Length: 172
Image (cartoon, rainbow, N blue to C red; front, side, top):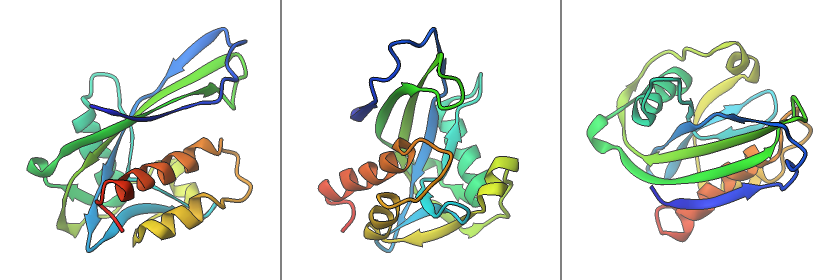
């Protein structure tokens, strides 16, 4: 899979250990709008998807996480690798740990029916809800997120992926 871009804060030189947590994320475009999760708590958008569990393939994680977070059922034959984003930064939870993550993005389609979300505690606290929004909605919101406990690269990452989609003519 091709590298879309790297996000490296360069703040990890003093770290004594590394924590790797890769993820798989779905890019679902329907009528020129993106299926996104909207955090009601902090008012940002993210692509459906999440962490790849030990022993799980990226595609298995993609299907599972998209179903759990968004209630969307991915059509398996529609999955096409799009690209990945490499992030490296000092952990915001432990300054001795370097956080490394490859976020694998896949273009895919979803069935028309949706299921009930199966959110974990953190996702429920975020107030994740499935929305279909324009590319500009994502850019406007994610580049202007207010105070949150999260590193801003998470919001920027999603907006930059949207910019890649626009640059390649997949979105307006």
